[in-house]
Image: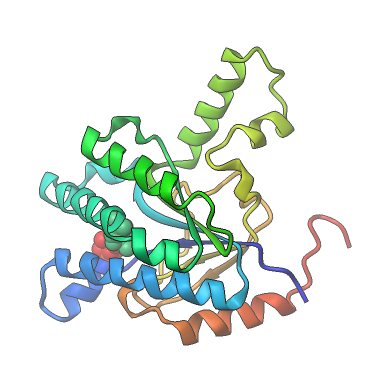
Amino acid sequence: MNDLNHLAIIMDGNGRWAKLKSLARSVGHKNGADTIDKVALTCIDLGIKNLTLYAFSTENWSRPKEEIDFLLNLAKDFIKKKEALFIKNGVKFETKGDISVFDDELKKAISHLKEVTKNGSNLTLALAVNYGSKDEIARAVKKLIKLNLEINEENITQHLDAPQMGNVDLIIRTGGEQRLSNFMLWQGAYAELVFTPTLWPDFNQKELFKIVENYKKIHRKFGGL
Ligand code: FPP
């Protein structure tokens, strides 16, 4: 049986979920944000120690300004409201992505939540915001050059965002598309991939249990036999 140390999820399908119900896309995102809590608590039940969630990509800036503002406000709201829940459940908060571009209010909310949850030992939850894998790798290489360190696999790995979370074992993408969209390309080099048609706001504990059960039975070879 495989261990599942690090799960990463591309939370796709909020817009289509809303459209199917003749609701505004923003309602889909709002419901999508609510799914995060349930999934995080399920990960704790399953003994998964690291969870990375793709919330806003470096490519999402090409969406209409109204939707970008809504998503970033939702992220701000989410981060401001999670302190009690995360502390109660031993969740350590992290981010992946270039957060230097955000306004001071969001940056402060992020560093506050990181600080007050830093001793959480049940689950490390990283929200990937303004995240792109290629950008993350380029920033890691720039850090190495600045530190005058050799550019090799080990050093790049150690200078990615939240490197303590390690390689990704399983990537789930909801919403039916079958691509990685610039997500965890380095850490997920040997990740198992699961694509489900379920739209993110409908994703639930039962489906996650099933996916994890199937994952545990896979013979992972990592290039060996
Ligand atoms: C995809 O839906 C989802 C996103 C763009 C980001 C994920 C965002 C959330 C789960 C809600 C926000 C949560 C936080 C904490 C910011 P889509 O709009 O691409 O859906 P579609 O493909 O059906 O249009």
